Image (cartoon, rainbow, N blue to C red):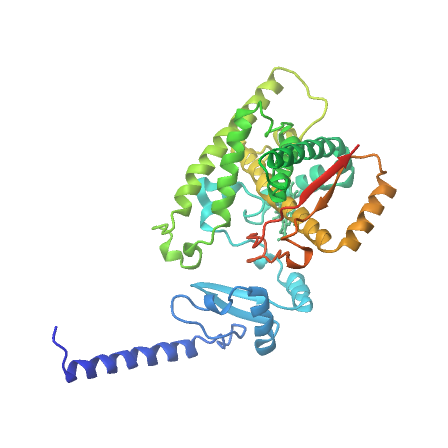
Length: 393
Ligand code: HEM
């Protein structure tokens, strides 16, 4: 096409008109609509997504000084209300708890209907209340937690052994003997959940199924944690542009298949009359009988599988990241580390297996950076790799 003055003028006029339309749309979309709380103006399609930056909590804090403690944001096409003060949060929970009680369900966790049996993503109702009650009475009571001390000790012993072996192997290869702590803490948390939920050492070298389950669950957690554009622009869901849902369906299907085998084995065990001395969470779910007042009398086998998977999602990386973060803070602060050791000596006694941790000379406590992006989705800038120096019994 040949350019001339008239086509250039048309181009400039059209671009200016488009820009003006965009700016006036952005102004009009400023959350000052009567029913909505105030908020910054958004752009077409993306809304306020880019207003949050890399540190959303700090960006939100800054927005509070301009718009107050109830903020309206448009994340893609998702309406989002943000509560920015403890007082307003208390009022919200007191006066509007029910309408806001359900979580937003990411597209990935709708794979194979997972969200419908889930406690974390399911809707508030009779089934949800029953699950919540079961978790409180069967998992979280301090009496129950104390009863599982032996299992925790066993899993800690395993972890110490794995760390030792890895440090020895690393030294044999001419390295310093440093270990990637997050790896071992995650294996520990996963194995502990396997013991609490299924009475299985899933990561035992004998358990092929356990390793397959671990691999599938790892992939599921990866898909569940990946930011998905379809969650913010729901009209893209049918297309699944990043392939997250397709991958989730594949890996969730695999994890469910393995979990179904665990459940079938247990059902057969029960039918054969072999009673276990210590009941685990799978027994609790399979033996559940409703009181006939609300909800169904039994938990379906599919929902049993979903709940078991959920405990692995909810309990593994959360626990291991928290411990890793605490370790990083202790290594940054030798004084606090000394106090913790003194307290352990006083309360647990000196007669226990332990390591003396060191950081290599390149990573000093001052240079350690445990900054995280996006809250619970942990993307560590520097993975914690301390060196276990020795241990004593
Ligand atoms: C340090 C470790 C943990 C951290 C930091 C953590 C954190 C959280 C947070 C922030 C929530 C959302 C709470 C809410 O929205 O009200 C949650 C929910 C949940 N957590 Fe944990 N968690 C941890 C360990 C565990 C463990 C070990 C389990 C299971 C064995 C577990 C099971 C769950 C479940 C099932 C939910 C959903 C409950 C609901 O929707 O009411 N968590 N967790």
